[in-house]
Length: 507
Image (cartoon, rainbow, N blue to C red; front, side, top):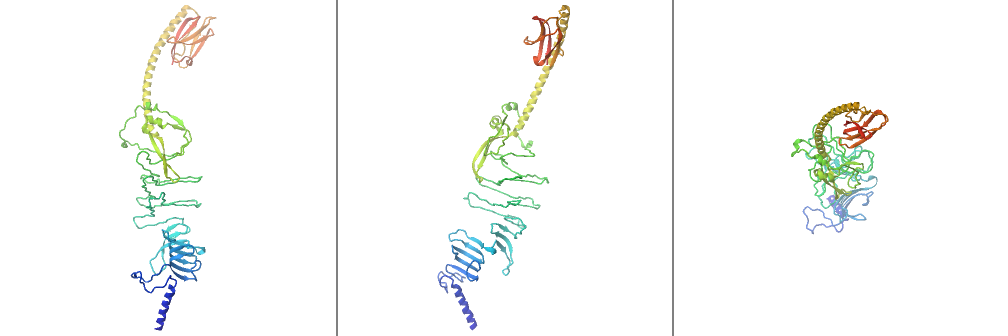
């Protein structure tokens, strides 16, 4: 009995000694406020502490824990603290006026904590547990087993192999008052050879696989994916790159854009040169109605002014500096208004926030292909008709020439007979060849000491050209470039007297 009494006395002394650190006297009963059912201890305002090892409540060599209000020497904190030498874990409020609580681990020196672990266990009596997440002191969070030194750095590594709905990460912002919100921001400032901000890999034989699915529904300005490359680079740069395999028979597209055909809406807009190794446009007959043949295209094309030009410097558009060939949109709009559209390009600030618009006219040059084709067809038809008419005229002219040749031959025979009868000593043969195209030759003979000319006139009697003859017997060469085209009369003239005449035809 004495031993039991002694133990009971020591127990109460221990309780009283432990409570001596509490502010105020220790109450033996709870009178106000009314006792809460099941309540065993109640402490006055202040701090409840336990010194587990050491001589004081220090930070470098002591081991202790506290709960309540703690003055650190520079500020008062509220919460729970587990202190080990040179490292601690705190939970609560940094200040009475804080709105947000915090969970914080602290360390210094060689024993400083580097990571904060989240673990799960299935036993109350064992310290064995499974690591499910890790937060590092440089702001990274890892899910799953701890990383090894050979693994690449991954901001979030999420694995789910059981449930039918699998979501790796959900970032949600319900605050409508903020101006800018970034769901995921990946920053890599290291000088590694390969840097990947976000990498999504989906393997297996699943029917529908989407690497990144982005949906926006803002009422003013939406951007699904914004990609910008800055800095200098001597290698290839791709703001957006899409590749698909060459195998398979299904529809495939490296980059697919879709938009309703509305004013100022485009499936793709490129502010600069666009290069493609192949291109197709939809032109199937089953897609069309109200099909009509292009008419009077030559007359319309005659109203267009084809020009060469260079672009002005423009802060809103990336335009080429080389000489261009084309049309002015305003001129083309007067003839083919359906081939002109007005584009309103948004003007954005450095944060991609729209601050205005820039309007300009653009030309559908592809639409001119059918117009040019119809014009060529019309030109060919008109040319065929003109050629047919011209051939008919040529045939009639040849018949006329043949008749004139016969007449000229008869006249030459008659003149020759007259010359033989007169014995004047003048002679002028028919030019050869006749008709001719480029050049012909006329043989002539003159009496001694006689001056003469061969004069050429057209059928209306209009004078064309004189040729002076300087020898008694010779040849006169006439070029068509000196006379022209048509039917002409040439005469041998001496002392203002026409001695004889001939006709020649130049084609």
